[in-house]
Image (cartoon, rainbow, N blue to C red; front, side):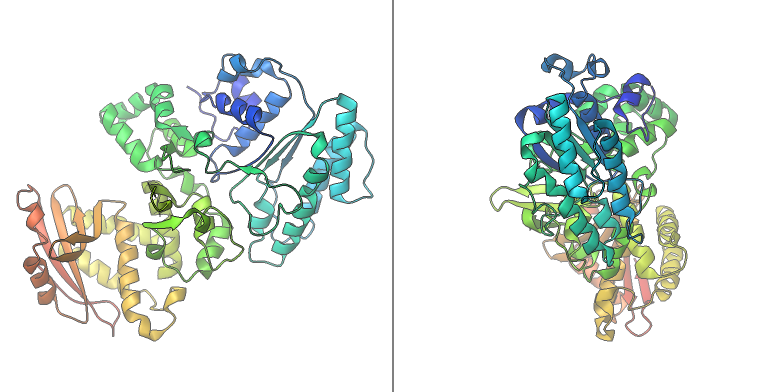
Length: 522
């Protein structure tokens, strides 16, 4: 089985013998039921392939769709004039001419095709003239496909180029309104929906299908598709790792599943990570390792909200589904970029629970935060430290774990996070630091943070193969008090019949030294 890793051309995919998960029924539905759309999905989720599929479809390439669902649905297979604009492949942050040159590059191609010479006019006027000429010459209305329409703005986020690029795109996209009579179909794909920054104010708002349940599966791979199309590679990975097929499926789900794009909560797997896992026959962090967007780093450097203040909470859709032009409010872009996803829906309140989609994203995202927060030199150090600490706890080496954590905490500046610039924020620093460490370690074990009990709330429980650790943390207290609280409130009671060894650990954090001053195990 050949995997189309990095293949964004539908023609190359179909003629090259690559595996293809058929999405053409949804392509036909989109074309049949509407005209102007916007679709937002995280990077590497197949948006470019979708655009290429539509380009082949509207070019009348029935040969490429033989045997697919759309082959039985479409009867006409007419060729339309297709205008494809791709904003990938350029950096729009520093070069003031990058966006204009990119648009000019595309327009020149189509001006040569349709014999137009209007290069002394504005970009928008040139585009409008092209659409009119193509319609007059072919007798068919035009199709416009825009891939990564928001990249020129995301690249320039929080720079002087942001407004310039936004205004240039606004003028260009306003063409759609005046050229409406010449348009058969329009699709814009991207990561974010810039509803608050007037990118689309010059023409009628496109139909946003980003959270439409009908199109949940148009990008990405559903569980049904995974288990029906990829039977052989799943079996091969099971043999290689000594797993059963069901165990392999659970690991794939833990690592790469968990995305939901509407209140229907249809499970969507990350296609880039899945294909790479099957090709390499390994479970690794493929999506996150493919690159951290520069705009995410910018957002995290500005925000005063810690990750524990963003995750595991219910939000109205308007708080995360629309982009707000404010780097101090990172939630919408973190969600739309795929680092958080919908995990639940309250139908009574019509609110959405947001959290990390899967283990791959949780570990990668927290590593980025930790690298900036801990400021300990090597960006991989926090993750490496957590992996080693997890190994120590798997072997029951509590003393080594605490010694290592004491040294680690001592290396962290108390004002590392923007929210902690005030020296009075010691307790918040303590809470946030431990929360981040525990969330990082949770990628290597079963973790329960601030779990509710009838007598109170335990700070942390870590469940491992041979051990269950119950942690209670104190600020400027003493370790005996921490152990006493574990015992008095019965935090270990649920594990009385558990075959694993239960270890109770009390840890005291000193506000003066800002590291562990005392600990005790029972």
